[in-house]
Length: 489
Image 1 (cartoon, rainbow, N blue to C red):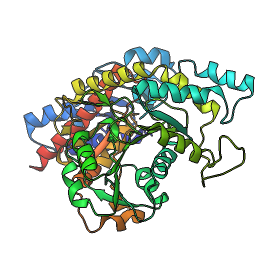
Image 2: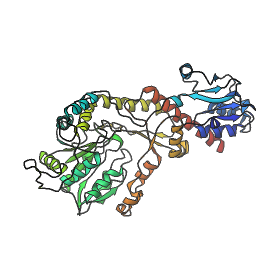
Image 3: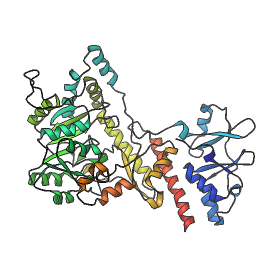
Image 4: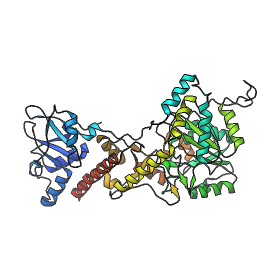
């Protein structure tokens, strides 16, 4: 999705108001000014408009009075390798003309480069381990890599009993079932989370109970938990949303006082830390996802980390059809087929070997965004607390709608610049399948975060210059909105 040539051009007899509207629509910060023959005669940026308005205070000023006539223009047949060196901090768009000098196209970094929201980094032993699986014919759920992956996952966390699963949602359901949570039980979880958290509770036959989130972490608000407790409450299910740990001391204290289970949803937070301890070790079980956009990936896959080995062994029994390990085809329990394949585990093991590098890259990414965006008016950056290590699964910010316009509009304009962004999850209580679980309560924090939050590209492969470009685009969008607000006054 890139602006069309029509969106990038304006007639030289147009006024500044029309030019500003065009720049706002194309989100590029520039328009090409053309004459009656559609030949480029200048360029006009939002900065040119701002400087002209400060002098004339008139939107009726014609663009040819404000445009830059000293601009770079190239023949449309010019190879990309000759145009690329021209694109820098000052020149980001080059108009392209035919032999008659008529504007027929344009070149920009946005058309050449794209910043995805996430992408896996498969530069380790993934291919070697998968090849070993194929050569040995061990490609299903039996094979050495499953056990190796589980063991090394436990070692990474320092303790616990790891049980691999086919995906993160299965991990949640398996944890709930292994803990005996089912019909008649209530599980308290945050209103702001991916739907899988609630779905697993419902699939277990239990009832999800939503509470609002903390304004600082966007994790479940401990102050709201107490009022949601009933005699049917069996478990608390905190979600370390977008990689930021919840207030675990208070959550665990409530759980222990009321004899409740704690199941951490760590799908987005592998490697995150609360007061120096990795998340996943504070409760009775913790669930992880290895979908393609997670810190480490197996394509699809998940893991449950249990505090007690006996619970882990029960979970393995349930995961493997409920079939006895001692007596083949004998089923003492009604189980599931939630097994991870040896192929998936082979990829996971190779990924786990690189996890410290991935975590370091995430911290570097977050610091780079902080440096680039800290002076951008109208952006609220992720919380940074001394007690938290936020792994920034997705670097997620909140926008001031008066300084940027609507969140969805910002996402569309970022996409016009080759930048993939995502909205924050919808609050659960807003969606039809879950409305009945809201129980008439209001959730102002989750609603505000959902309405104004957006996640920026966060792949560990993202280069620092791309982060700088993303910051520059956001500042440009905010600058154009400032000009519109100034005019409105």
